[in-house]
Image 1 (cartoon, helix red, strand yellow):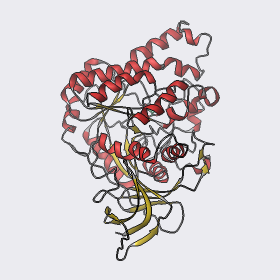
Image 2 (cartoon, protein in one colour; image 1 turned 90 degrees about the vertical axis):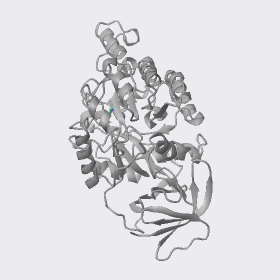
Image 3 (cartoon, protein in one colour; image 1 turned 135 degrees about the vertical axis):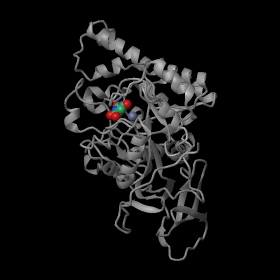
Image 4 (cartoon, protein in one colour; image 1 turned 120 degrees about the vertical axis):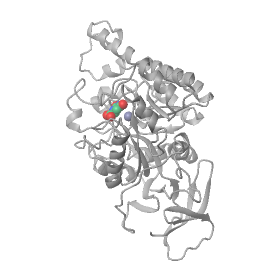
Length: 452
Ligand code: DOR
Ligand code: ZN
């Protein structure tokens, strides 16, 4: 394997920064220090560049297998690498859905042939697979179990306590919860049909703005309340996915203080509000729905205070022709894996976050929350998963830049003025290079392991 000596980069960790040399050997960070030399290593001058741990995006939908007309593990992992993401964890709403361990293993084998970054494959909860979930407790290649507590892409809804309670009580693996209240969501749809939903009087059933009215703040907060109650009652570790509403915070606080609950938000909830659906229609529709400006502002604050400890993308690519079917017919979800890290760096440039906080949110905390081995830190002995950033390079996001198969991005027109990804290494292999000074490797990634 190629050895690299990264000279004089500014290493950003979760707690500080230092100018240092870094040696990559045999896939690992072999040494960090000053005036290092390494025999037969490729030397890369990193003077003036930032060196970050590669992002760990614990929430993506790469659509592989079965939905590869939208996206596949090869295209989406390339998008990830171009954005400095070195590990992804894929959700179970593929075709087939990964609701058994053999199906997870098959998907792991598939990704081991075509996903260019490292990966984790989640097991999905279903009405009839409790025994399978229990068996997964012993499997350190399965990072977590996903529960869709409300309807979303893929029809995996599991909203009733008769299914949820035994999962919380009888399994031990980290539970990832899509926390929306399905009963309230259904009730509001029914009210709308009967012309009784006050906020939606006179609205057409295909008006995309209706999405945020149906899936309102209370749908989110009641979902999170219920999920946190289940976790506290069973003393079960849980991670709340895609926090979107400020009313979820008291429950997240309660769960965090009990040492049981962590959470993430996604770039779409940090950059957009439901008003954007008036202009962009289905291209701003996802589950949970976008909320108001007060929520958007509160989410930034929650990242700063540490209440929400991760940013993950919920990268959910759909084709434009699917989105163009319109509200009620077209699918929910937005792509995000390629731009999340540069977007956060742009916010750091504006002073909204420190670079150390960006590292906490994108690599250090995901590795801690999910107990991922050997990743998430620039430290000797850790996997050499690294994003090299040029803080002086900038670009306006344009559809031309999109590597994802869907070919579009909701962030078109946003200025990335906090730096661009120059090079991305996964376990010491150079996998993305914005320039042609070094050849990139097309070796596939490997499954991650977690501490049991
Ligand atoms: O908007 C969403 N899209 N939310 C989800 O929960 C699933 C995702 C998808 O898979 O498209
Ligand atoms: Zn998702």
